[in-house]
Image (cartoon, rainbow, N blue to C red; front, top):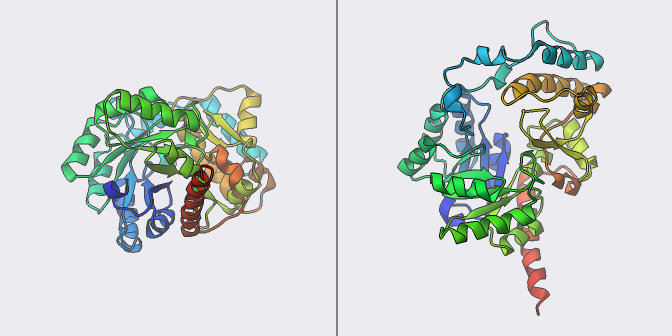
Length: 368
């Protein structure tokens, strides 16, 4: 992996925060900026900033192009937002009223999370105008446009999977790297645990006569876990949750404090944020939906409904609203129980390196 993407240490940091991406790459890891909510203009701005702050070190971009997008491209953003049923809008407004969060008089639905109704070619084109060393697609099979663009520019394409069957579909599609994420991971995840998924995917790749590197993901929060995954045959680790507790992260101070206080049993795999199962920190947000017995809307409608409301809740929580603080949630994996303090992203990379070395020394020592 280090030869393929040019980094020093095969620790891949997925983050929506450019500061985290730059800090990790500068420290010898490999930062990957999540661009799902960016317009092409915003992505251009973010990548320009990273170029100026990464000290020439490599980084990548995750553009997330869903397979269904080709069908949805004829539907306007406003038409998609209009599909949200009135009773769901009313329910979220009631949540805001109950916790004392005011609205500006306009419906808080859609906002900056309105769907990108193109095939995502604009985001790919922006990415390839910068010195990126990896393109990743985190949802569904990587589309032919992405594979072709990667080959044209000599940039490896990675894709996330949660089951060995998904891995084989990605390989058939032509991806260069598989990121196998177990159910412990934050965000969209499957049900198979990381410690089972990694050897299962590696065996399936070998049985198919392929030679595709696999990055381990899902609940990995330190270098000893990373060493364990690589002892099983993984080529490196792909982590997301660990960066949420860093001082550079896009998360609020309120949420970071909740992460430090949380245990591994304080997460929930729920559809009540995006419409697909994703692991999040359990909060009053999930309790309200569960108590009401209201099923989640499909993606992207649930995301368009929930994200603006949750941003308003986060803002009120930061301003000291205790009811809003109880509703605060974000995508985070079960490894949150290993978070003991908020640190800088560069310090986390250094700790990973030291723990990684210690993990292999301990393994070797057991057989002396």
